[in-house]
Length: 352
Image (cartoon, rainbow, N blue to C red; front, side):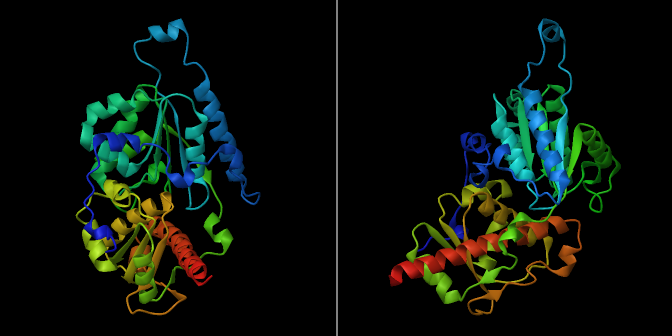
């Protein structure tokens, strides 16, 4: 019987949470040397050079005897990589991780909040405070409480001399704009912004360079047959999967897809509510990070080559999460293209 994601109940240990604080498989080979800036967008070359310089700065000794006599280290500065999706921010962030020697950690925003929840705030600060560098990918604002927690964590780590580098699709002093307006929240965001040098990276989504712009669906029968004959594949109906995601903390979505070769999903349709859409976005992100293809069909069982349109409603795309949804569409198109190619390659191999 084919496994289903909706049957899985991941419960990663603390050791697993700590072990996962490294770049995901998709970016395991990312280096500054293989980041190729687009000549049409000079900000990409400028960001690459600044990240390279920052790595060199971290390699320098922090000070001599007099520096060690200081009661407190000088607060560390950080870098904030802002820009649209697909312009290479995560590539640069993971490249920095690989370029720096010593203790360093890498995780998404939600992975850090989960770590704090598992350890407690002070223990998390003490653990991460031993690092030279903390990399935070996808600094997003799904929850004002989590964001206040993270800005406090950043401030405490910076006070200990830990360098912080983060990516997001929103400038740090604009985080939460149009979503939360509490004065305490805004004060926290402004304090966080002071810790970062903002590097704006312009450009086009690199995934579109391969001509992959649409989410191609396949006949439901083909999707089910593929799942039944593929080792380590999963097969889910879209609605039960969405329901299951509400029972699993987003920080565990990585563990949810452990050892999955391809995720097959039938009955996909448009979404109009944030509570479903945002959870599905996180799942797409984890699938993309781990290079797990998706093989999908539509709700009405349409045939091969049908395009999944309007996954996110117009209202969702007008919301403060617009960039997050657009990024997910881009990543899903890439994953579905990988899944379609995987299915057709398997069919060709069987025929030969």
